[in-house]
Image (spheres, rainbow, N blue to C red):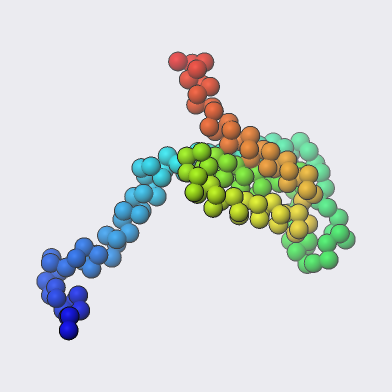
Length: 162
């Protein structure tokens, strides 16, 4: 009958690496998330998200003062939790679409995984009574434009300012 791993390796320096230090098993994954190839794949998504938020919430909501949909249209209690800011465009949708669209070219698997929550965010904003469908469509367009700008801006800048 085989002995358990703890009985076989009574000296700590002879134990397998994962038994020596539980954190050692997490370090490669953490390094992959914090730097290296994953950071290069994630950085455009975060940059596009910030740009989308600045455009949708910082500029468009200040310019277009559109009221939220009437509370009478929605029979549930979530309508009372809506923000008081302008309805146009949907900043949540802009951010979700921007991150997803910016990540897809370099990390297709993550982009596919992110596409489902991005679509759910867009649908939820209309269902909860926070936005009209046109607000969500405008947010998605801002998200796509932000992702495009994030991907193309370095090339455009280098082309004009070598």
